[in-house]
Image 1 (tube, rainbow, N blue to C red):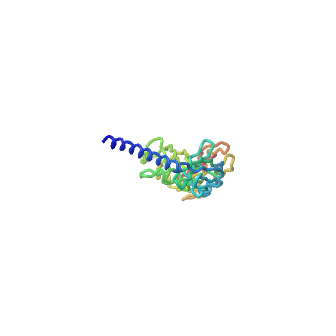
Image 2 (image 1 turned 120 degrees about the vertical axis):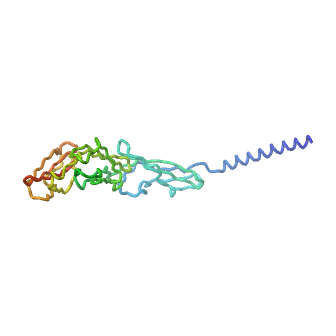
Image 3 (image 1 turned 180 degrees about the horizontal axis):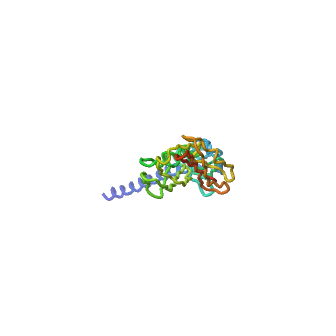
Length: 264
C-alpha cells in the first residue's frame, strides 16, 4: 500500500513537471512581439487628401511574419494642439494578433476654421415665434456643412411680443476641435413700423485686415423707392465684428436691414 502511495506521488510530480515543461515550451513558441512601425516623420497634407495619405512613407515589420505594412491603419487623429498641428496614431498587426503602435505629427497646408453665413438679417418681427438659428448656417474646410452643429447663447430670454435688441453668441466646432464664434445683435422689431423691405446681397461677410470695403456694394434693393441711408461702424484696420445698417425711407414709410462684417 505504501509503495502504491509513493508511486502515485512520483507520478503526480512527473506529470506536473511534464505539464509545466509543455507550458514553458508553448509559451516560448508563442509569438508575443508586436510589429515595429517606422517612417513616422512629420507630414503635411491638404484637408482634401484621402486618409491613406497619412500612411505615406510608413512601414511595419514583424520579427516572424516580415513585412506587414498592408495591415497599417490610422487609429485616430487628435484635435489641434497649440501650434495648430494634430497627432495621427497608427496600428499594425501580425499573424498572431500582436498589435504595434506609432504616431506622427500632421499639419494642414490649407486648413480654414469654420465660418458662418446668413441668408437674412438677424431681425425678427414681433407677434410670432421664430428660431434663432433659422437664417444662419456654418461650414468648414474639413467637414463641409456644420449647420447642425451650431449652438448659441443669448444674454437673456427673448420676448417676441415686444421690440428689443439682444446679444447672441453663435459657436460651432469642427471635427478637429476648432471652435468659431460669432457675437452679434439680434433684433425683434415691429413690422407695422417698418413696412419697407430692404434686401442685401449678403448679410454676413468676412474680410481681411486692411482689405477694401464699400458698404454700398452690398445694397441690392427695396420694396419701395426711397432715400437710402447707410451707417457703418466698419474699421478694416482693426480685427473685430462690425455692423452696417441700411435704411430706406419713403415719406412716412421706412425699412431696415443690417450687414455684419467680420474683419480678421
